[in-house]
Every structure is written in C-alpha cells, then in structure tokens.
Length: 444
View 1 (tube, rainbow, N blue to C red):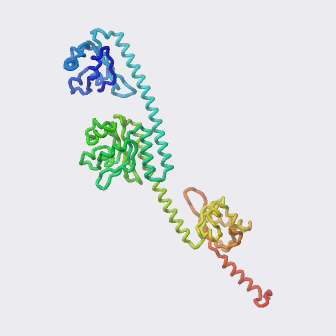
View 2: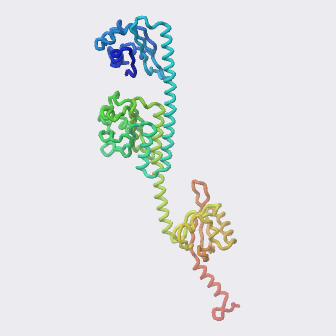
C-alpha cells in the first residue's frame, strides 16, 4: 500500500509516516500485520488499539523512533462505488490512550462515509467523461474510415485517434515478419519506445510472453494490468517505466476474416483496463478491420471498373447505360461518343436520351420498347433514327439488356451499332426498284 497523504503536528513524525511501507500481504512482516493492512483485508473499521502493545509496531519503531509517541490508532476502510476492496484506508493516530471516545468514533465514521460519497461521485463524473471521450473516439474512427482511402494514412490516423481520445501513451499496429518478430506498420504517441524493444510470436521465449505475442497466438484480446507486477513483462518493464507506461493491451485485427495484425496500446496508469475501456478498444480493433475491408472492396471496385472500362472501350459497338424511369444516360464507351460525334463525356453522360431524338414519335416508340426490355429482360430494334450532337441523323440497330443491380434502380445496357450506311444503301435500292434507271421515271 502506498501512503498518498499524511499530516502530523510534528515534522519528524510526518516524515516517519511517509516512510512506512504498509503491505496487504499478511506474510510480509512486519508491515503486513499492521492495523491498516488488517483493515484492508477485513474490510471493516478497526481500533482503537495501542500500537505499543503490538510486536509488529515495536519492530518498526526501532527504525522510525518518532513513532514512539503514538499511543492510539484507528483505521477505516474507504469504499468507492461498488468496488469489493477498499479504495483507501483512513488512519488516525493519537498520543493519548483514551482519545477515541464513542462520539469521536461516530464522527470519524460519518466523515469517512462522506469521503466515500465524494470519491464515488468523482469517479462517476470521470467515468462519464471517459465514456464521452470513448464515444468521440469511435465516432472519429468511423469518420476516418469513411473518408480516408489510403491504407497507411488510415492506420496512422486511427492510432492517433486512440492516443488523443483514450489518454494512451502509445498506440501502434504491428505485424510479425518472416522470423516472427513484430514490426510496426503504424504508430502514434511515444513511438520512440518501439525502437528499443523486441516482441515475438513465439511462446518459447520471454519476448513472446507479453500481450502482443499472446494476442497473436490466441487470436483474442490480452490485457496486462501492470508492467512492474507481472513477471511476464520483465523484458519490457524497465523501458516501459522510462516512457511512463504502467499497463498495456493487445487486440487482434482481422482482414477478410483472417488474422492480419494486432493493435497494441499503452497507458500510464496501472489497472486501467476496466470493462468500459476494454469494450471501446475491442470495438476500435474491429473498426480497424472494417476499415481495411472497405479499402479492399474499394480497390476491387476500382480494378473491376478499370477492367470494364477497358472492355467497353475495346468494343466496336457503342454502349451506354441508361437509368429508368428518368431515361438519363449514366455511362457510355468511347465508341458511343464517336457515333454521336460528341467531343467529351459531358456532352452525353447525364443527359436525357430525348435530346438524341429528332421526332417525338420515334422517342415514344423507343421508350415503349424499353419498357418491354425492363419487363422481359432483353430485346432488339433495327434502324432506329437518332440525332447526333451536331444535329445530323444516324441510324442504329439497338439491343437492350436489363441490369439487375443491388441498389434496386432500373437500368438497361444498350448496345448500339451504327447502320447509317446500310440504311442509305437500302434507300438507294428501294429507289432503284421504283424508278427506271435510264429515264428516272417510275416503273410501270
């Protein structure tokens, strides 16, 4: 037990009180058998007693002679919230044997209750503030995931958010190399700490016994409450103390259902990872995985779009995708632009198809045909007159294929073949059939 506050009417006595190292371990003699230690273990007020009659105190007074004047001691456990163990022990010492009258004991008990209530209220306030910071952390992480499309930038940003909003000394994401030694892929906070440590995936060596190695092997979160009190942390305890780190944790990160890395965080306080903080950190590790999965999906979409664009532009036919019922052109290939003699995508994409018909009758005819395609799934029309961007008339054979996409929007993929020359030749043949080639007069 650490003495966090002491006050006496004599400087030598106050100095002696500050030098005492009371232990909660009953086997740690003589300090483990003093009244404050027993009060902690028994969780009830003890005293008054005369320490001069206690053999443990007699041994301590040999090294701290100022304590000889103490003739009466009482100890009260101070509880906070619903913690089963006392948060602190309130100790009152007197040099008068009969100092603690029943009235004074009752007053002291009430004072301890007031202190407990104040500490409980303070902790609730701290927990509320902490939860607010945690919610900001997750909210900010989700915003970063939705906004950032570069993997390295995303991982660095998430580590920085963890340090900023959860008061961590350090947050880093690590992956093991071919030899099983973890390498940092992103970090924020006291990053110099990482320069002097070695962490392994192997359970056979000391460097693999910490939370990072264990979390990787077991594929579950691992929390270390104290660098100094956990023997497994010996390889890193001295360096952690130099960087002001009291506790750490490691959580697995999954990418596409496969273990990909670990998120490691370090806090200045010991015993800091309560249920709320554990839940937030586990949610953050999941968010990192979600963010990586999103980047993978975006990358695959870009690759697929690039491949589709390559295929579309390699076609000798014009291709366009049209949205219904608006009849808006959403996408075209390069050949479609050539057919319409458009100089850029902006001349066609986003425009209603009505702009490319010179007659309302033709527009109505093709619109009715589109409804058939939406209903039956496919269809073909021949010799459909369209108007180019420059106003000229062209003729196309069009084939429609309904697109059934997850967003539920009705679309048709139109394949368009320029048959203007065929239409011209057919007109000429028709004219030749109707007129005498020598006289130009109608055939009888």
